[in-house]
Length: 143
Image (tube, rainbow, N blue to C red):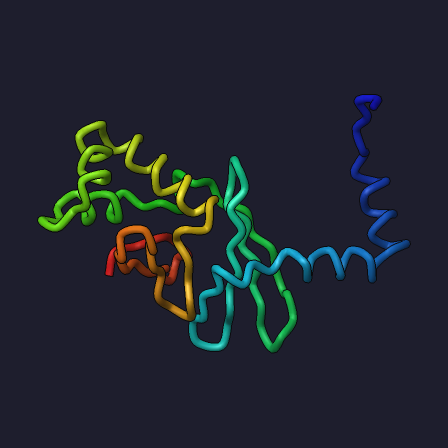
């Protein structure tokens, strides 16, 4: 296949010509395994290789889309809190010894593989039965 880029004008025009198709594609992005509710707003998180995509949903309508880096989403506080746990599973203890970046990489991998899930405001790392949360800044945070 040819290596072709798309100009901003063409992208905008495509969205104008096919708004229903674009809306349907956006609805398909909702990740039922990672939905967080905060007050009247619901957020759906998608974990791509290089970034986290966050859909803001209010009154059953996607109102905004936000992209965040994993460096920002996986807070240092989460890693520090997990590292200080006396009941840290052996595999996570090994990542702790390997350093913060390796620990964050393991969290990122687990998010992408769906072993960290969310339901309402709770976030559960199923492999280890560890509870986390999403804070008001939409960042992974210790409980």
